[in-house]
Image (cartoon, rainbow over all chains, first blue to last red; front, side, top):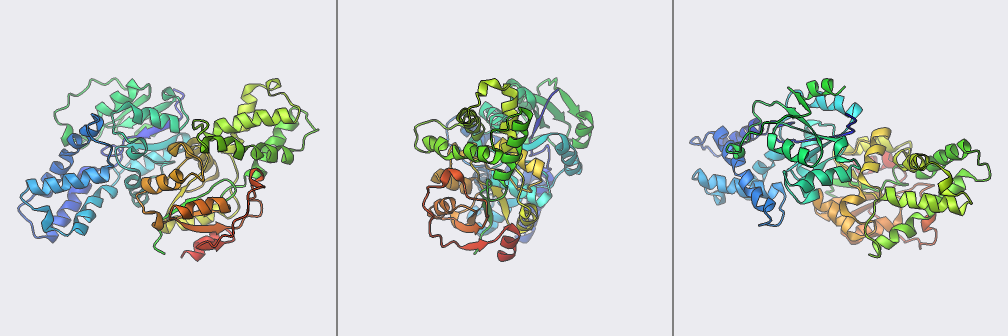
Amino acid sequence: MDVEVLFFDVLGTVVDWRGSIAAKAQLFLTRHQIDSVDAEVFADAWVGRYDAAVEVVRAGERDFVPLDVVNMENLKACLDDFGLAPTAFPQAELEELNLAWHRLNPWPDAIEGLSKLKQRFVIAPLSDGNTRLLVNMAKQAGLPWDTILGADIFRAYKPMPEVYLGACELLGVNPERAMLVAAHDYDLDAARRCGLKTAYIHRDHAQDPSKADSPRLSGEWDVTAGDLIELAAVLR
Amino acid sequence: MDVEVLFFDVLGTVVDWRGSIAAKAQLFLTRHQIDSVDAEVFADAWVGRYDAAVEVVRAGERDFVPLDVVNMENLKACLDDFGLAPTAFPQAELEELNLAWHRLNPWPDAIEGLSKLKQRFVIAPLSDGNTRLLVNMAKQAGLPWDTILGADIFRAYKPMPEVYLGACELLGVNPERAMLVAAHDYDLDAARRCGLKTAYIHRDHAQDPSKADSPRLSGEWDVTAGDLIELAAVLR
């Protein structure tokens, strides 16, 4: 297929945001002796606000703000929803909880799979996360990226085409020689419209609660794999 | 000093551009049986055109073009200067020679020094090179960057302040918590004006022939070191 660069969706595809954020939320709730709130329900509610929050940026109704800012706004709204006044907590504690997004745990196959893929391809995340969030995550988890492309480089959120096309331009590659690897149909569909190749990774928990209402696209992707180690075998 | 991010000048500071380009130029000249041209003189002449070529971008007289494009234009002009018509060579051969910039060899201390510094700091190149050039260089040489920031991200060349300030913004760090590591006074001086800390690395061959006429600034830098391993020891 003559692909030389692999871009990766990160949240859900490379790391388990749902489990990681629920675990950090549990620590926060326990520390504050709040046992009326289920940490997994809280995590889903927090992430559930994500899509609508960035949609106003996509629609040009709000200037670009990085995901760290979006996440903090959503965290406060979410606490409110659960009857917990954000002002009742020290700001430093909220910031610490917000950093849960910088410390998401990779899926068990991610590091081995990426390391194999790196031998043959240039590998880079292409994520709605901001660059520092992705840098911290990679450093903590040992994700062996060649470079990191956060949404703040393009000042746009997926599936806006300038993200995919801007990434190809920075990596000096024609779109048909780049491939997006993702566990989400809408992301792959947008990449394909920009001319990139597509690889679908099946993740049981990839479903984004903020996109529960989105239609599932009948994707005919270039490659499908169960995880990143399998992807490396398929692309060998 | 409370620094968390180290930015590195690359050409001259981390890699030996002069020796690397002269070696690739020698291969090219030998293949074409041109023995009237000294490869080191040719390399100096090629790089010597660099500063004037990007100055028109800095001055706003030309839209940003990535270093790969600047280097190719300069290569052709340089061949002309040496009495060699660029059109006498296959374009693919000129492109191959231009890729010498993607394959510059690190100074002997660079990988060990960067690996040590990476344990404590976020480390990233901040270079006039374009992102793909820096990615290829890192991949070939094994430079262990956390992420890579090419001039094409900012569409500006150093010492334009938007490069230093843009890099700090992407890495989510206030300038006073970032440090530029460089072997060139003009670069450190510009970083300091933007509020960054500065580390001067002494490189015998760092002198850029394109800047031979620049005044040497009497730098009082925050840190001075003989190489990157020594820098890691100083910043421990």
